[in-house]
Length: 416
Image: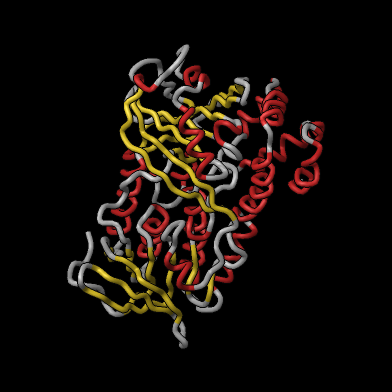
């Protein structure tokens, strides 16, 4: 899939990072006629699986994505069971598919194949050592593959190389505003019933302080992905020690109890979720997209949809008039910040509130949402990638929600 003789000296666009964001960027750019080089340090794309594998159904409406859906889909998700710390359950039940549980490894690989079919040159097993700008415009990257070292020039460098981005570090970009640790496990349940059409969300400071734990149906009838993110690594460790025995997980599986003997561990991955983009996404002819830019949703940690939305915006900017140094990246940044970037900015407001909620606060909030009118609004208009928009609709429907937790009133008013 890659060039084994070594790269050429110059490309229109160099993309660093062969995850879904980088591969989609390569596909869209090459499809528009750009000469593209995609570089990734891994020898095997899509391994290990990096997230819970739950994506918005709208993702597959983006250009070039429709043909991938049936190749990666595991389950169609219509709703969620959201559990408060005390065990109260908020049942969300939509009439239409809201999200898909996907085979994340297959998803990454299919996007890389799309990039290759569009004409992108791909180098895997290749380490980017550094990137820098050139005085006359464009930039260069220093790479190592095996014993070989190369310097490659490009009109545009796009960093899609994840939370520990080499492009971000060597180019001197600001880091994302926050990074939270998390863990995701693929398991097989030996008893109970795995709901095939909904996910579970567990809240509470003993479970996932400052965030939440998730339960996502995956392979077959007994496969699950469970995991959590929390404020600190120690909080993640404590939460994972209790997760399997949590009575709310048992309830989700229609069991009285669940213990370690009822679970087969297939894989586990630890990592960090960067959120809160820096004020500036580009320098000269270099730009960050995706996790390298902290584009994960502050309320859920999901990074695929925001990153691919950013790729779509940048691709349209590149495709309309071609790459114009000094103008294209400014236009993209302005369009992004006025569009989905605004959702992420406001999501950071909600994130500040979520970080500080007590168990009593969470119980109170979930209880207040559990009435017919609010459930109908959530089920009809809720979108996992537009949580701020839903929060605003709920506050407008019932302004008394503002007084549930008075100390957060200034923040909540800011969303309106």
